[in-house]
Image (cartoon, rainbow, N blue to C red; front, side, top):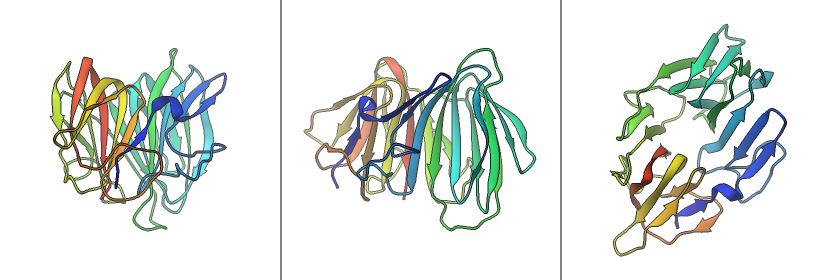
Length: 242
């Protein structure tokens, strides 16, 4: 299938007095049948939460929920008995399974930023699960979810990398697998096959590639081969959604 481009400026946007949230895919009151997800990836929300504010207790069911903390900290409580604080660099993986209720509150004195990701589990009705881990992110791909890292109820892999200015990164996955690249911060270029012009990416942009389906703007055929960071470097998430 062609590569799919989701420009940051074309994402759905929720702006409240305490929440600034950008939605890569359809979410809550934002609906577009062309952007319901990408394979089992259903949500990428880029949330900035004001101090002393957040999401009160609310339920989830049959969804794998991954929270990647980018800035600040977030306090989590849930019906499984967990009361944790997530700091920048930490990742939380919560399997909602048969049902879980949780809250996410910024109890600090400055705004926090996080990416919340929802992935469909392989099967419904499993027991709720919880894991939290700190990661040291460098210029190479660091596994967050998958073999050798955190486990969820779906055979997907998730990496994060922070390449320095103009460094290049090959993709650590099979080129025929379904994948999604999301820019957290910075800028960069993606290169698509031999002889093709690289494409510029900025904060909030996303690119889907490989087998599968989705909407959006086609970028031509060919595998996504590597990423080159911009002049100020980049902060990237990479999903393998086989």
